[in-house]
Image 1 (cartoon, rainbow, N blue to C red):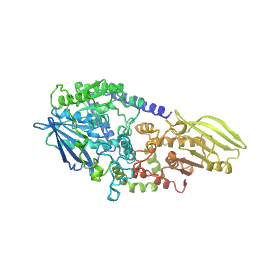
Image 2 (cartoon, rainbow, N blue to C red):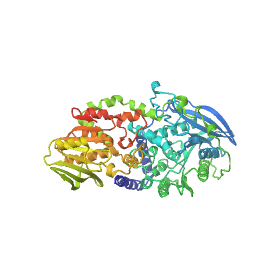
Image 3 (cartoon, helix red, strand yellow):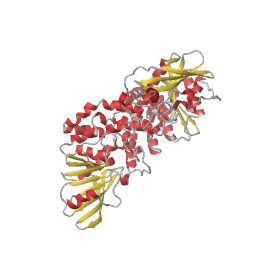
Length: 633
């Protein structure tokens, strides 16, 4: 249900965007949209910090056939280290420079496919910098689950280099949960690493800073797409096995890890084609695999749109599509296509060298650190530590939240959670008696809070019902036996209170799935990402559910109960509606700061609101309810 609803909402934005693009007639129209969209893109990822000294150093050298490799380390931010390999052709420079961001290989820059594309280019006159992304190679951002990310000296400790989170995409998303809370993003962190890597590349005397290219595959294709859209120094680019369209991605495999999800992207009208057209008319080659899991129809549609924009700018020949009939990966045909594209536009040589056979290096030969991990060697600041540093900037501001006027607090909550000032009244679609005992009745009900959002519920009513109405929202779903928990049953039988119990959207009967084993991000991970693309956090949608139900069934004296996932939901509902006189939180998250401070969390993406820790934390929200009662169980 929730996925259908969210896909329908995204489609409205996709359709509106198509009309906007179709209306672009002149170069001035295109350039104006480029500037507006680029500004929105940068704001959505959290903006960029000031550039600081790279402190680059060469820590090792290898000789290859027709090139040398330098193992290098530099700092993209103070004490945040990047490990990279710099491939330099033999001969006299300066050479064109090419940046190669890695895809999701566990060994990062040492993966065979990335070595081969770098060696291929170096043997054909291009200097290449290939660096480890966070969470990969020598840049695991959490070596041990017990390692405190606190960047201050008291928070550091010696640990054996060992990944605390299995899989680079999981670590990227775990970083993203905390980053979103502080108004940053995994994409922003990774883009900045790429921008600073270009800074290092152009600082080298062997490189001509006016002839810079960028190519990468899969996750590296993602970063190539971002960087080529945002960094004007990239003369030509060749993203591989990434460009499709969000419209087709959502309809097929769904949203992927954190770096591929830009908050509000669908809402402000940015598609995959825009990564290409934001840089138009600079040369761009889209490389695709006919058997990719990224939808090929989306790739071809994005190319067709980009080609029309390039033609309107008078340079249709500067955008191309290379397709090869194989599976996802930086395979030899796409490596060769990327290399030839770079030679065409950076060396002015429109020829077709082939890859041939050559050996690659062993992982340890390309290693830049003693231990194999920057955090173990340098005890620097991880991406989790960056989240914590950012959160601490707003400590004083959060402390003032409870002191603000009620209307100002409510306006802040509505803005961050995208809850409208006027919430519609939920519509009752059905009600039938489930059971009838001595003066007690239980009813099965269904209410609609938005078109297509149906919430199942149970109503427990005594013939002499009195006192505050109780709204109970179990995070794990309505009880299968249709009965109240023991402690609530006392209220029902002794106090004769009327009790309503509901599954909010995406929970219980409307959950997208059932978790067989505990997971990091919950069964509603994809729905959470779709919601963030719409600039409508899932938390805010559930708050709307509660308020819409209150409009339909509750009076002026309401007690509200949230369990687990619904705890933050009912807390926000109480902050927005003074009719809620008492709040009970059971086994609920108490603080977003705890998510940032202890980076491994479980099922917290569902309650993320981008930038919320710039304004308040959950304890600040609790304090703002005073003198109303908040009970914690």
